[in-house]
Amino acid sequence: MAVVWRFLDVLFILLAMRFSLWAHAVPMNDDYLYLSSLAALMFLFFGEMFGLYRSWLADKLNNELASLGSTWFSVVAALVSLGFATKTSSDYSRFSMVMWASLVPLLMLIERISYRKYLLYRGLNSTSIRKLAFYGCSNVTHRMAEHINERPWMGLRVLGVYDDRLHSRIDLRNLTFAGNMQNLIDGAHSGEIDIVYVTLPMHAEQLIIRLINKLSDTTASVYVVPDSLVFDVFKTKWATVGGIPVVKVHESPFHGIDGVVKRLEDVILGTLILLLIFPLMLLIALGIKLTSRGAVLFKQRRYGLSGEIVEVWKFRSMTVCDDGPVVIQAKKNDARITRFGAFLRRTSMDELPQFINVLQGHMSIVGPRPHAVAHNELYRSLVEGYMLRHKVKPGITGWAQINGWRGETDSLEKMQGRVDCDLAYVRNWTLGLDLKIIFLTVFKVFWGNNAY
Image 1 (tube, one colour):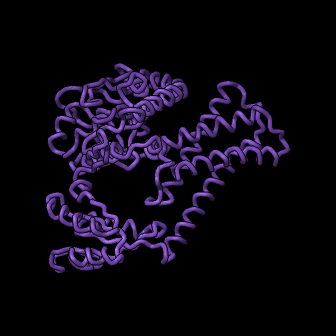
Image 2 (cartoon, helix red, strand yellow):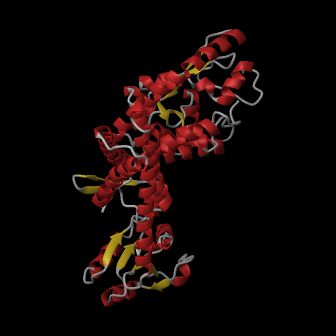
């Protein structure tokens, strides 16, 4: 099906170009053919980055549309940048290009919504519904059942839970107790059950093997689901080594091609942003010199990738430059903060020199905020999983910052909230997530009121 989606997306890009030119009486020439072909190739490339062509049947429509929007936005941004760089943007009809840029995502949107509607119709058709049962009741069982019930287009209906424990000992919540193992096997034999999900705990190995052996004499599809320990405690993902499935417990998302993409993002965006903010940085440096004594830049040792120490640059905003075994965080109405420094900290402009750290390769634009070495040594023993933040490079902004975990961490709960967001970022990174964080940073961080 992914091949069909790719073909249709390319077709929409080419046809939308022809229609937009026809609508504005602009002749189709080699320039427009080249542009639409390049756009199609870029769309396929960015589509792979944003996971556009993975299976979306078990996911929400909003997530698929967000991936589609990020892909097309990246294509348009790349083409506009290329046009300005080569000074060829004036060669194209602006009205036609605006119409084309609007029509392509609209066609793709209609296409994907229509497909979902078709699947919903087919899923509600009783002749095509597949009946599903769980053996074993756990947190994962409830999560999977809820996920399936919220997505009727999958064409699955949950019959209930089979378990050999006493009915009264099972936390069924909204699920139906359907019987024991023998009832499950009988249902699979008679064709009443099409799919079986085995959701037993990891230690029930012998029971799982016995059930699978008995179900092998039926035509039911059988899936063994790792229990809640794997998903809830370790927050895992799957990988393969030599064709053998393995569970990734603690891993960096930036190995292989994703690491190349992340570095390209940092270099390209970091360079563009530095060029834009360089005049502002000069004015800030002048303001620091005129309002207080001391150096313009403040360098502090912090943990970087893999826990290695890096020097992070900031505009000096205080009368002190602590970088020893004890570092006191800035507090509200802190007497050490200069008047101009308070403005810089409130708007996060004191962080702007860190774009130089990004180009040096010590930091990323997006990632967990680096803490002073003294704070790392304190919290690594107090917050579980704290050092896993350093599976990626530290960032100028991050998921924690746009979710309100910015500024002073005067309680363990605040640091825990920040770390939880950082680890969620490490587990769920995509290029689209980075772009979203950068966009939201302008509104939620630069103009926020949590830092002082």
